[in-house]
Amino acid sequence: MSNELTTIQSTGPALFRASTDAAGLCKEIVVATARNIQGRKYVQVEGWQAIAIAHGCVASAGSVERVEGGYRAIGKVIRMDSGQEIATAEGFVGDDESMWAKRPEYARRAMAQTRAISRACRSAFAHVVVMMNAGLSTTPAEEVPPGGFDDDAPAPAPLDLTPINQAADMAGLKTAFDALNKKHRDPESRAKIVAAKDARKAVLSQPADTVIDSETGEVI
Image (cartoon, rainbow, N blue to C red; front, side, top):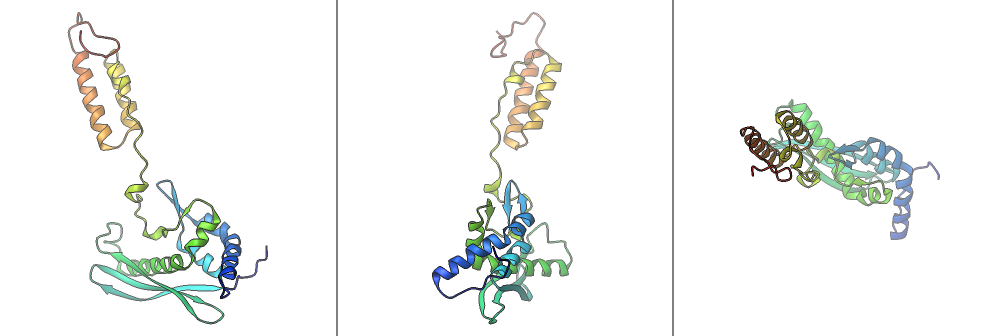
């Protein structure tokens, strides 16, 4: 494949071919710079700019201003051969973002510009990311919270309390409790683990002549 920049043509088929060529041309850098957040890969601004360059375009941002609730910037994608503006988008950094609220003003202004660039490129070239077939999300990485979105979080592993319920002594109970507590970190599972531990501890604290069902762990 040629390493020359792909120039956008005006017809539908030509545009599609240009995007296909661009996807192959810049896939390596887009994938290499993608950020992994909660098991999903998001394209960072370097990747979006590479896609723009592969299409013969340049992306930039300006018009940064303080507005109610945060900082806003406007991003643009412009063709290098004609200066034609093909996409614009807004980048915003909110005062309610814990990661950015206490950062210096220059940092928040810069991030607003970064988000604006990524967002403008996404509006023009999201389909190119899909064409790469590399498991990349088209949401710009800079817009994703450090812990990912709520629907990105993996489902909690199934909780099996059998090791606690069948612990033969206090030492075994502690071992089972520690293992489950390490494996399950979500609040709901943690609460169930503690409840099971307390219940089993009460059973194991019964007098020595107490008969305990080996399967259910309950006092007979």
